[in-house]
Length: 231
Image 1 (cartoon, one colour):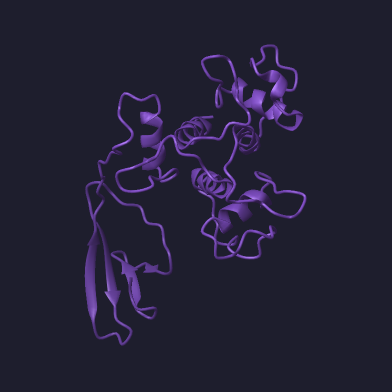
Image 2 (cartoon, rainbow, N blue to C red):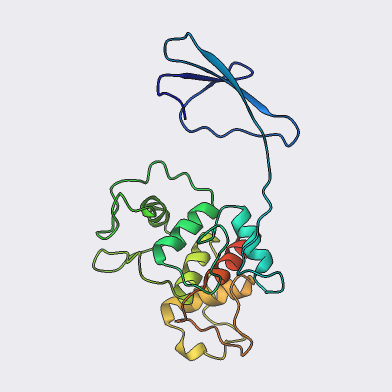
């Protein structure tokens, strides 16, 4: 960071202000110069592109979710709970899933950090802007009492609804092939669940069940989001 009044310029003389996105070359460093507030001191810096090979102790290569977790983590969509742990079988809060979706879509959240429409989402909550963005774009919804319940764990039936909206899928309410537990899928989620299965984004288990009320795991979320981005 620099002093708020310092001047930062690229090697081409372009003025850099605030939070800026720059393109880094894998071979050549990005050069910047920083001039102090009084204009008397100038320092030059070089920014290098460097990849980081990492792994999670609880995500072995033999597991079905390995590749998708690595991909989602590399993209900064679904992060680990620590530098060495991902907690693949852990569950996800509704607020955190909204944040993952916003990251996956590379959403500009700069105008969504305040004035949440939900009574239980504070401007200071780390997921507030993501929830506000997702709600404003029709991706997520709240409850009749005006809450979002961001700390509730998200269920598989809810994830299907979110993903279906992101991909703008046509609901499939009369599937030719049904899940074994079709009878327990709620009507509001049915069309979205089968739409996601048709696109091979959300699938069932080895017994042909969708398990709509089961809690979504972090490994499943990583896999689903990676599949979603391939659509």
